[in-house]
Length: 85
Image (cartoon, rainbow, N blue to C red; front, side, top):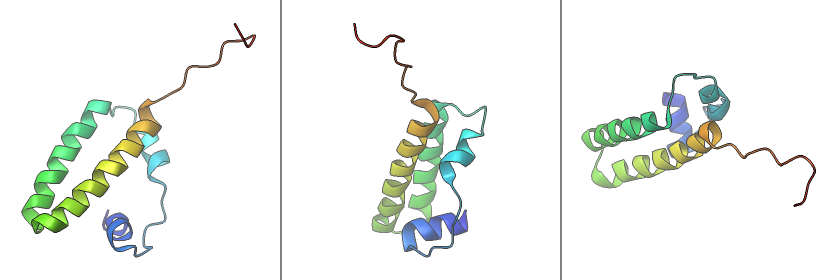
């Protein structure tokens, strides 16, 4: 997690993983879990950082959460066989 956040916030390049595929493997995660995670993340950031810095972390975390939710829960319906109607 340290390498991930250093790469996200400081652009350190320490993290070389792929978050979406790693999260796609989690079978019991629901979309509602992201709200819980984001609330806890926001509370922790507010405790650890000055408001301006906490806001940077929370903004980035919200963007990451949106991206992960799209990867994990948004699926297009298959196109109808046969084409046009």
